[in-house]
Amino acid sequence: MVKVLIPTTKERRPILNRFIRSCDDNAGVPHQIVSFENDVGYVNALKLMVENCKDDDVVVLMNDDMVFGKDWLKILIEAYVKSTRVEIAQSQEMNNPNPTDLAITPIGKAGWFKKYACWEYKHNYIDREWTDIAKARGTYLYVPESQIYHNHWSFGKSEKDATYNTQTKYFELDKDLYNERYALTDGFRNI
Image (cartoon, rainbow, N blue to C red; front, side):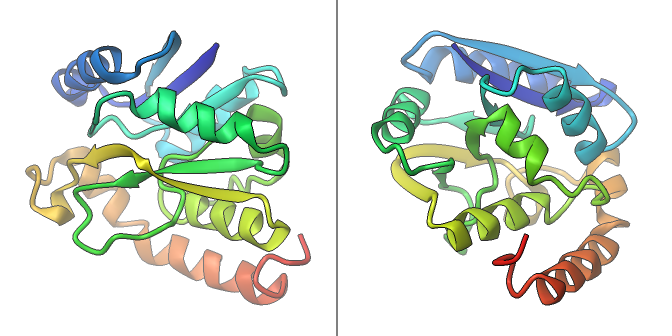
């Protein structure tokens, strides 16, 4: 059974409730939602959540400000398991005005995320690094038929709250760490 992991904060309980309803209504397959209300930051929360999973557990790493298209998880998991070469796969993020194939909310085995995680990030760029690693390994899959809607403030889909404010102050630090790691690993080919 796929575990949907969601770091969240106390102030975001209403947003988390919307996430859970939308996920349950639109997943199309059995799944387990695991949320972690925290004040340790997104990446540290993900670390704690992933480390509590077995290496073979299939997990989707989520943000609490998302809602979902019909059968998003069914479509994503079917595409993911269909290919033996895929290590991570990603849905299409519909609210982003600049469509991208960066693994904003990737699916994969918990062991893969443990192996390839740089837990030094605070909030941003960890997912971008995972995408680049999987692309460099030839094991990345973009699944545009699986659609999610990220209601992020930067897309004009929500108000900027305290959780967003906390992550914003780390953006440049995370970006610098990403650029440094990118350069040192030849675009994550040598990791």
